[in-house]
Image (cartoon, rainbow, N blue to C red; front, side):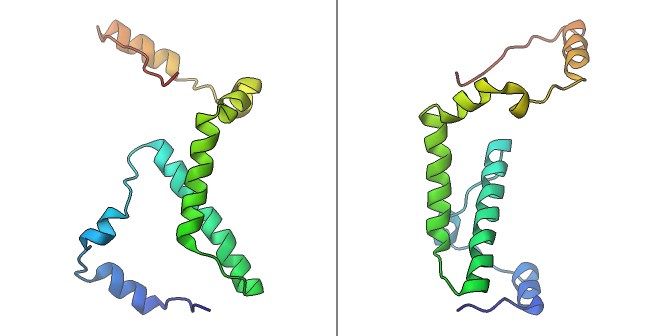
Length: 121
């Protein structure tokens, strides 16, 4: 069983001159859009769930497998249409209206800006 990392170890890791090797870098993924941030949060929550269970029961898990399984699940529900079907069945549950959107679009149009809608469907 793994022990929790102490405060000083964490401080040394974050505030030292630690070099990220090419091997470590190749396993990192940028959080450069809202989809990747949501994915990272889901992965973190799932790992936390397994870690908590491990602490209570001693049951082990493999974090890299959790990441792979979450990413596969996300990909599957988007590719097979499950996510799209759920959203189309109850849009109000998933899509929140933005009260400022209309005035923003009016402002952009009146300022001579051209716009287009880009979607994956």
